[in-house]
Length: 271
Length: 305
Image (cartoon, rainbow over all chains, first blue to last red; front, top):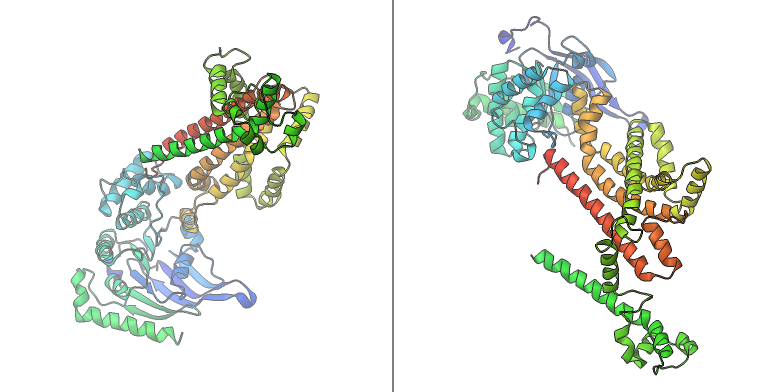
């Protein structure tokens, strides 16, 4: 089942990166309250690439935000590397990539990537070294001195991924990072992301509402359904780790995509 | 080129209207003078002329029209009279002369700049407090707004009297009045600017575990810069108004405000108008200077040219 546990190299490989047990989150109180997450049970192992897919309001982003300690669950248990999300954040357990690149317009690409490093108190030399490394990783070497507006949308998003990679987080949380980009750029970035994942051996949590994207990228696809947000089905992908773009035309790929679509339809109910 | 032409057209239009307005405004004075000089004027008594309409007088005394632009103490001076006065009292006078507008402008300018610095400093401090403390948001903001509803012309004499009684006089009282007018736009603009980062930018800083200070220096303050400059431009103009108003109640002997006051005591309309223009030109220069600083700073901050 845990397709990628064999590539683990961490010290406590047996410990899941994320473990949610009976997780609930209710926004507001009384009659206006909304149950955003209901009874979420999920385990994400080291090296997994997990996609969260579902219609709007299914809680996929909310769950990711819970992992990042940007939301506080109202019930159940959630651990990140065996710690509470708050503690995990203090340990710099994760990098977060938002839907928009969110680069600071008044900082160059290099300076944007340095932002978390400055906050976390890395030395100047260390900052420069890391910036060069991650720029190379997202194929933006040579663009460090540019300001964000001088880059295309896809390049900006790559820069924001570099920013999330700059410090040593083993977990990368991505909230529809390519949602605002056109299909061709998106394909290219998906391919790059897989390469990056293979090179860095990080654990990735990825929110999307594109079925092909989820199937192409993931080792594990979490299909969610709305009102209240809950997990409908968890599909483990049998696809090999090495995935050229044309894997999307193979019967195996189409079969999983079909299962995801069926899952989405069944979970969607009648609204 | 096209822009220059459009601007010149508008200026020419305004000057044209101004020259035309001089005719009805100044006709009575011209006719009174003409009668004293023994010329035929219709109607021929000052009382009758007082009751007659200005346009009626113009129509009946067309010979006098070309004199309305060169009256010594006109109700409305003609543009070239103001321009000549400005030239005479700036370029043609020594800067140290009490009759030099440059000298008076520099007196007002020093109060303006000191007041602007005080007001901007106070405004920025208040805005930081307001953004970071809900209590300050609810307590300071309403008072800041109320403070601006009190006419400065009523408040200025009181400030000067109170400060004089505790031994403060000269530059500082004027600067305080200038600061009183200029802190408000800075507070409003900076509160808006410091709150301008969106939820995503704030969340990003949270994921890094940034401290309050880091959040302020690395996100809130840089985000607020465009707002700050918009406020500073309003603030410096308000500051100049404050400094001029501050010069009025003291019966000050120096400054553009004193020049205005002296002009109105002696009916020297040309002097009043040229002092007004000097103030306007000074404000224009100050705002333009801020614009240059803004462009260079925001340019260094990577704002798209």
